[in-house]
Amino acid sequence: METRIGVIGIVVDNREPVSSQLNNILSMYAHIIVGRMGIPYRERGVSVISLIIDGTTDEIGALTGKLGNLPGVHVKTAITK
Image (tube, rainbow, N blue to C red; front, side, top):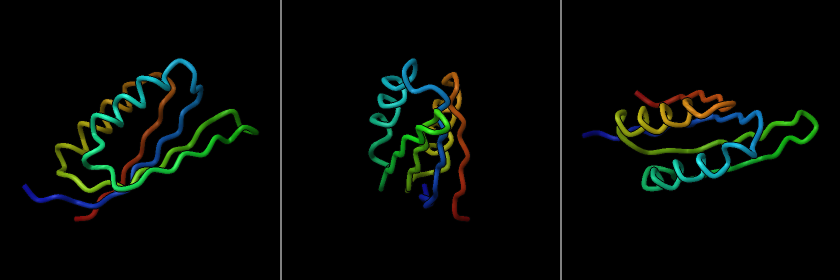
């Protein structure tokens, strides 16, 4: 299956209850993650993570679905055609 390059933006409202789950999910999909940058935005009380990914649409959808099901985690994706 053809892979696509994309960007996933993640905003985490409250890191404490979900950080281990979030990191476990990202570890499961490490094979499609090309790069990762995380910034704690303390003034707003959130954390922002951006991922550069290269995977199939099924893999990308599964990753974003798992992340989006975590409480207080908001996910947006942009992928190539």
